[in-house]
Every structure is written in structure tokens, then in C-alpha cells.
Image 1 (cartoon, helix red, strand yellow):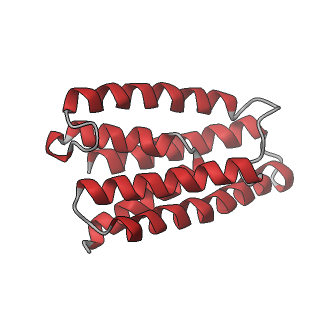
Image 2: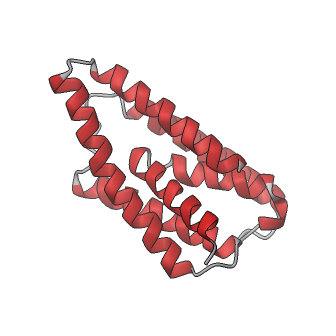
Amino acid sequence: MHTREALRATGFGVIAGMRSLSAPAFLEHRLARHEHLGWRWGRASKTRRVARLLTTLAAGELVVDKLPFAPPRIAPPALAGRLASGAFTGATLARAKRQPVLAFAVMGGLAALASSFAFYGLRQLATQRLRVPDVVAALFEDGLTLLAGSRLAMG
């Protein structure tokens, strides 16, 4: 198992815990950028279309996150989605890099689970104890998500 790819799978899992749709969007951009990593869709042009679609969905998630009716990320359905996103991105990366799929899926899923709780706690700390407006805390987290995702997609 390549340590660099295992860390990358974990990184995508962390992103999934922050913003569930951002992790697969950034991974798709990585796969589209490195055409030799084309996977289940077979052709890079399809991977690019999937990357654009996922980017649109991820952008929508960034907006919905700020709305008052958005459920907490640790609510069971939201947490399950984040865990699935982390596992999916880990497994997909493993498949593209010919690494152990189950191990990478577990790494991505566990990282998503851990970061969901960690960033939920940090956001609660920022908004309740430090009196940071929720939208400001959310925008800061968006920035972290975009920075980390860009680094993972480019590397």
C-alpha cells in the first residue's frame, strides 16, 4: 500500500466530513486531470462531465449549509451520507491507483466520520463560545474545504 495514496484517501475522507459532495467532486477533477486514471466511466470526457456535475452539486451544498433548515452534519442521515462519501472516494481512489479497495474505503469512511464530529464541535465552539456568527464559521469551513480539496486534486 502506498503511503501517499493512503494519506490522499484519508484527506478525501476528511473533506467528505466537512462537505459531503465536495470530496467526490474534487476526486473527479483529479481523475479527469490525470486521464490515465480514468475509471468506471472508461473515457476521460465522461469523467470531465461527471466532475462538472459533481462540482455543481457541491456548490449547491455550500449554499444549503448556510440555510436555517439544514440538518446538523452529525444527524444520522447526514452522517451516513458523509461516511458513504468518504468510503466512496477512498474506494474510487484505490481502484484508480490499483490499491486495496476495502482498506482505502475504510480509511476514507473513518476519516469522514471523525471529521464530521470534529468540525461539528469546532463550529459549535466558534458560534457558541466565541460568538462567531454561524455564517462566518461556515464560510471559514468552506474555505478550508476548498483549499484542502484543491491541494488533493492537484497533487
